[in-house]
Length: 314
Ligand SMILES: NC(=O)c1ccc[n+]([C@@H]2O[C@H](COP(=O)([O-])OP(=O)(O)OC[C@H]3O[C@@H](n4cnc5c(N)ncnc54)[C@H](OP(=O)(O)O)[C@@H]3O)[C@@H](O)[C@H]2O)c1
Image 1 (cartoon, rainbow, N blue to C red):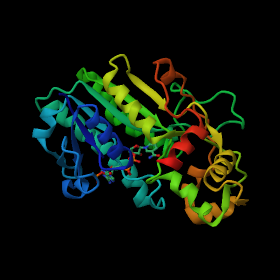
Image 2: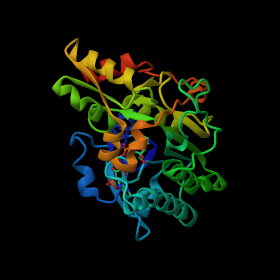
Image 3: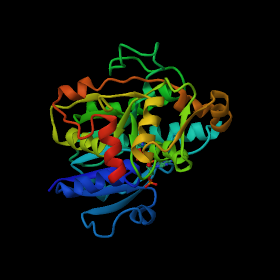
Image 4: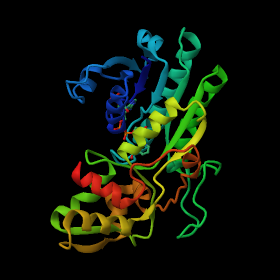
């Protein structure tokens, strides 16, 4: 039975991924800043998941756990949309990713290990805004990073882990779209106004959202671990990016039937509410998953309807 060490395994993607990997027969070790609080995020019935500590600021890591790992999944990082982007928060968003990547690399260089694969998260924030809407040339993996905060963060994040290839380790980087999960993240936020019967379209609603269902992103991580022919960067998004207006109105139909009123939240109000982070929700980014599809990956939820229906019944 192979062992997978997961940094940030206590988060939204991590908890779902740990359950999938455990169900597939892997031993899972969650590498966390706090084993006791990470443990509380899991169902007590899952016995194949254990917990190990690291301290990124002090540069320490549980070396016993590290030695057991056949594969590493690297998800750790301060939440991009959890707090307003003050200068301090931006530093934390970047440093939590770079310093954690560097600590993994340093440990790989100095510890006897058997790690064959690293699958690291990145984000579609790598790409700039669509040059036109509709964008007839969705962003592909070879496109350069955007020069703004998220693009620069993703570039530094990917650079911090890339030296693993020089150590003979297969590296897969997943530029992840907006993950739709009923539990947390962007999706429940989009859904909130629907409780009041309001379909709240952001700005003019034309901006394209490149999304992925939580079960599919976890299955992509599994594929990246198991498929030794996968290497390098892949966009992890569903094949059907949609406009914000289409997303919100489809959600309204799925969750409220005909019982809703559409309204536009003006850009200035979003900017006041979110500050610089408003670029996140107002930016249009049409991202291609062709490279992933070429590996033969089969999406469980390729269309928005299929994903929303699953989230409605999940
Ligand atoms: N969810 C999305 O829509 C989405 C989209 C694109 C990319 N991603 C990326 O995918 C990764 C996983 O996403 P997620 O949604 O599961 O994130 P999440 O729920 O925020 O979890 C991330 C984990 O990282 C660890 N972490 C938080 N702050 C940290 C810090 N300052 N220093 C070091 N570790 C820290 C935490 O684990 P411990 O507290 O146990 O240490 C946390 O559980 C993230 O890097 C995220 O940026 C997510």
